[in-house]
Length: 209
Image (cartoon, rainbow, N blue to C red):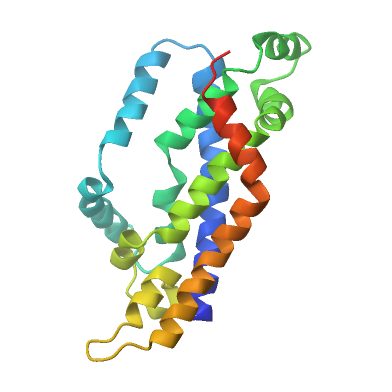
């Protein structure tokens, strides 16, 4: 069970970090960098939220199989680094950051990368913490994709590992219940330390400045 726990922790942490980076960069572009067709592209971006994962799972698996990413950690992580909701959440927050701050930095010769690193990210900590909670919980509790993409016991995450403890004729309830308690602890710790930022992030991300 500790192997499953280690896999879940590693996959969830890497997926969360990657999703924050990807969503933050996309949100900054959609919120503060003007270009032709930006709003239309953003609407198309959001439409992807209406497509259930079950619809894209089969073609995604076929692509991963052709790329030889089945039974790999990369195969577990890659689908989780994109989140239309995460991009939307961060975009709404970044839009509340005053444009004069960015314009002043640009006049001083700062590139968009410098603006993103020095202004946007420090001012977006509450929203980033909120996204981190959502991303970590989604990755930690993910069951269907790890079940499909992995058959190697050494790569199985905790939800898959716990399901394997339920036998056809008998179930080791003591180990199963202990595993369920263990699976709850990381999420509780993450929320405990980030709850202040979570509430602030959800509040500020719903206000357009």
